[in-house]
Amino acid sequence: TDLFSQDRLLTLGELQKTKLYKSIDEALIEPGKVFRINLSNAGLTSLPSEIFLLKNLQSVNLSNNPLTDLPQNIKIFKNLQYLNIEGTNIVNLPAELSDLKNLVSLNLDKMSLLNSMNAMNIIFSLENLKELSMNSVYIMSVPPQIRKLKNLVKLRLSGCGIAEISKEIGSLRNLKYADLSFNEISAIPSQMGNMISMEELYLGGNQIKSLPEEIRKLA
Image (tube, rainbow, N blue to C red; front, top):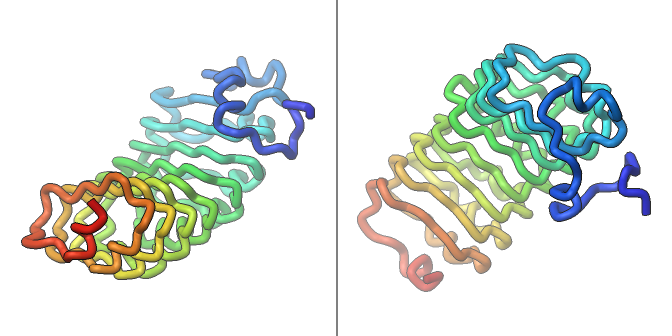
């Protein structure tokens, strides 16, 4: 099989063996062979339009740039699997993000300006998502729609002002790791005991007085 085929999703191992590009100029030399790009800490206030010539991108790191939005063109990255926009100034995620059905990892940590209501609606349409990180993004609750992310393996929601967790979280049978530390949580739904794959659950820094018996059994 041709490693540089437009339509083939690479495994994480294969992706890590491809060259990691660190500038658009370097990537444009052979745009069809660019699968990973890291433009973190590059002082970007907007996404350079040339990035959309890199149609085979499967991993994009734009973290810690003063970006204020993601263009609607993001939808052309049909094979995008990993997107990191941590620490950016983006307020509204584009609705077109929900077209990225191959996205398995989304990092929105420390996006303090993010319209989390809008973001959650988009995120819940990404049903292949395996890793979601929203540390330090104010979301107030883990809503019932969390059940849509049935393939989720890792969930990071530390310091999000969460006061309530929907019992629907218990339907996430593939979840192995959940960090819900440093929130305003006072009660844990007993349905979390149904999360049969759970290996690491962090709940420190909350107002939880006692854990349901079902959760203790997970340990």
